[in-house]
Structures are given as structure tokens and as C-alpha cells.
Length: 380
Image (tube, rainbow, N blue to C red; front, top):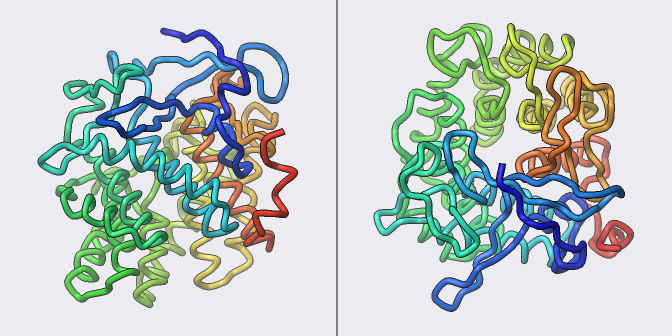
């Protein structure tokens, strides 16, 4: 693995921000393109030294051959997280971070509207030919468009919706990606509802519901479900909320009984029902936000309790039996394998743990917090 030299804490944290975003700030660097500063988030990092916020060594992603140092997959999700923080707290720092990371997302959009995923180096050179970075990949295209639609809803900036409309959501058999696409379109619908858009969203959710029986699948006819990125539950629950669809509520309830409850009761999974390792925050976070949405919709205390049991994965309710997340710094270990926590602390784990922490605050009744009351959790 390629590592950069560790940098000082002051260099790693260019300006203070809310707690769940602190580690992502420390992973953020920038380059200049056509006179505009573009901020990106390093994919992987490893602490170098002791303490809660030691210097970091950055690690190049090469899980599928050479990938690069930063990607749309992370920047788009981080922007959504920052926008959620902004909605909860009114934090100007969170909004500034969201805009910075969205600039990277739009930088990666090609003239035909599709998105590449990775940059190969600190100069911002796009990786256009890797298996995880070609223009138009389903995952990063859907995440980019979800982030842009969310940004339009939250900020009202028409520039974001113009970038969205240049893009495209391409057909796929992957129910996870259908969930992401539905979530992106629902952000648009909340701004400008129309029947054609509603039908398009419901067609995606209908396909997810029909992928059963008993619970939402990843693909039709495939009983095994990868918990990593299980966006189906949130998508159908949100559509149930938005469109008052009782059939969607029933389908979500069945998924909770037949998938989510066994997953939690048996100590979480990477691939249900046969493979527990490796587990990471993204194997749990989508369950949390889906259950939170269901609790807002019903609200059944069992959904709240189950969601909070999932958030406890961060605190030691995991195969390693140790806390993986520091809520004061926003740093999360990259997962657990064979009962051992990862020494690395990259972007995805911080992002997904951040979504879990926000959900936990909402479920525990701590909801919106004025930015001034968060001063003790800003940069120290």
C-alpha cells in the first residue's frame, strides 16, 4: 500500500466543524482546477502515533487494481452527511464542507453527464478506465445524483439541479442501486412534485418490494443479502412516508421481521445468513437510517429500540467487543475481521458512523442542536 508522509494535526484540520465531520475534515485536501479550489477526501488513512487525533498516513485505494486517492462514492455521501448536519444544527461550517465536497462531485462529471469515480493523484487527475472508476458506473452515478438532489432541496441552489439534470439514472437489476436512485428522485420530488416523477419513484420501489418474498433482496431470486449498502429499506420506508403507501409499510415491516431482526439478534453480518466477516459501519448504518424512517412513520417503539441496538455496534456491540467510533472526533475504525478491529480509519467508516450518530441523536430525542451548543465538540 502506498502511504503519504503524516501531516500535523493543524494541517489536517483546516477549519473547525461539527463533531461527526471532524475526521472527514482531517482527510480533506484540495487542488486547483481552472482557478477553482476542489476539495477531495482521502479514501483510506492510518493513524501514526497515539492520541485521539494523531497524525495520519494516507493510503491509496487499490482493492480492484489501482484506483486512486479519493472518489465520488465518498465525497457524495460526505456531502449528504454534512447537509444533514446543517439541517439539524444550522452549522455554517457543515454547509461550507458540503459545498466543498460537492465541488469535487461536479468536477468529476463528464461532458455527457456521467461521473467518473476516482482521482489518481493530488493534482486531481481522473482515473477514467479503472473497474471502479469508469464514467457512468451505477453506484457512483447514483450517489452523485443523490447528493446533488439533496443539495438542491436543502440550499435551493439551482446550480445543483442543473448538474443533476445533465446526469442520468440508468436501468439496473441491482436492488441496492435502485434504492439509491429512488432516494435521489425523492429529494427532487420534495422540491417539485409531479405525477411522472412519483410514478418513476414508485416503479423503483415496486421492484424492490417484488424482489422478495419476506424481505427485500439484492437481486430477484437471490436469498443471500449483503448488508453492506442495504439502501432498500430506507428507500421503501421513505416512499411509504412520502406517498402514504400502506403496502410499502407492510413490506418494510416484513423485512424488519425476517431480515433485520435476525441480523441484529445474531451479532450482525456481512452477507446474511452465512457470512459474518468482515463487518463495517456500512453494514449497519443503512439498517439504522431505515429503521429511523420507519419509526418516524409509525412510530412503533420496537423500531426505535432496534435502531438503537444497531447504533450500539459502534460502541462495542460488535464481534470485537470494543468501541470503534469516537463521537468527539468523528473517527471510526474501518471494520472488524475475525474479532479484530481494523487499525485504519478511512472516509467510508467516518461517513457511515456519522449517519448512525445523527440517527441516534434523533431517536434519543436530542434532534436539532443549536450550533453554539456544539462549541465543546469543535476543534480543540
